[in-house]
Length: 221
Length: 212
Image 1: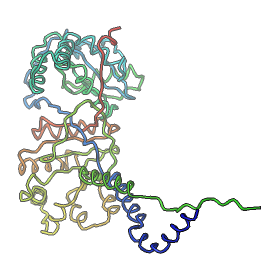
Image 2: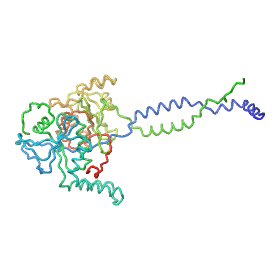
Image 3: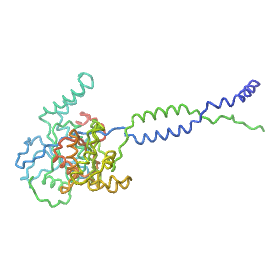
Image 4: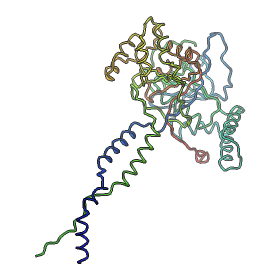
């Protein structure tokens, strides 16, 4: 006990010296907290990504023949109101005005449009999947660029998958358009394009949704 | 009765490790910071699986807001001496018979976000310093066929910076007719390839599962 007291006494003398190295860091911590909060709130961590789209050339010559595509491979997807998708296979001509094919309704879920697209595009999708798996498991060692090149070549050579014509009803929104393009990329569809909706397709959507048809004059485009 | 004396402990906590940690976090944030751009209208971009990052330069961004307004932004070029922004504005001024002063061109050059004012109100817009007052006169760039200023902007941007890439940043709720109109204007001006700005959302599909 005596020793302890002695020590305390000795410590008391040195008190002034002991306090000196202690700096109160609270204001510094406060400031740092503020700075960290500021940076965290103003930083954009993930840069936005981009999705490339190529539009077809504008038809300047009204008499020019539109490019011919086989009707059996054509798949028409119409983006409807309320995030719904309508689709029908084949080609409809304006002459079939009284005999329009029924529209199938689906949605943007994995069991909706994606299942439908994959069923039609299975052959190509399998080829791409096999290639990706080979690269992932290390059985095939090629650079990332040549993987992209091979996938591009596979898509180019594809002659069984659907040719998707994407059309948007006037009540669709921008999110739907991006979603459907995304769906095309996910399912590896080789040929797809965004085209104008025709007046009879608008009618088909209107009858399918039960929206009172707007008086449109049938104009041939 | 003897009182129970609690051992008096010093209330001082050693904050050095905490300060160390904060320092590290702070330096990390400062080095990785790319300032979030302030946009004149809040935009929720749709999601996609695309992993390509947006380019830093030679971009022309069309912002399509939820309430059907069109805003435009373009960068000043990869080199500060190029000064694309004031040159494009000067060209636009010539087209609409508006003489912009050197100060106004400077102000436009350093204006950081997308702008959506008709060209006739540009002078007034550049003179205002307050953000809220600026937002009040931002009615969107006119895109009607009678007063198609967006087409002129695109034309001069492409004339002055031939390498420019068009990007569309739209809100998911933007109505399709507006998107269609903007795409038509771009097609008319011969912009065929463009990029849609999206947020990343990875999707993995299992072929066997879907086939079931």
